[in-house]
Image (cartoon, rainbow, N blue to C red; front, top):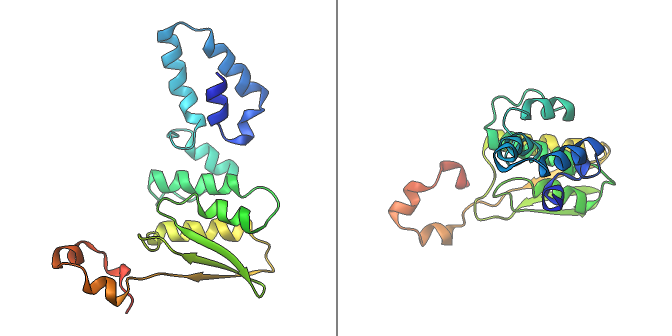
Length: 175
């Protein structure tokens, strides 16, 4: 049971109802426990399905229906991680919620600078919009944000085969 509690979002770890529920599941027979654990999976961000809509409503993320299930889960995780004192580390945790979201967060001259440093470049348009929304809900309103994008460099393109170039989406290239 302690392993399950450690995997839960921090908001649920100390919740008496959640702890009592997991305690009840621990005393069930194997078949009953499997059935109950299917419901408990809804408490984990990576396995949420039917409870996701409720969690989004509670977090103020209504209107994410156009996003994929994974993007919706990511936006929810980012919203959860955004709680606390706002500093560079908090913003970095929010950015780390995004799959392939290798983003470096810095602060220079009163501006929060988010640099996409990963090999995958920037997230897709819908995921990028969700990331920007999460950042806007995290940072103080008086601070500006700046997004720096990394595109393929000429030397990287020159080293690619035609097949590799055909696999790359057009937004990876800077025009």
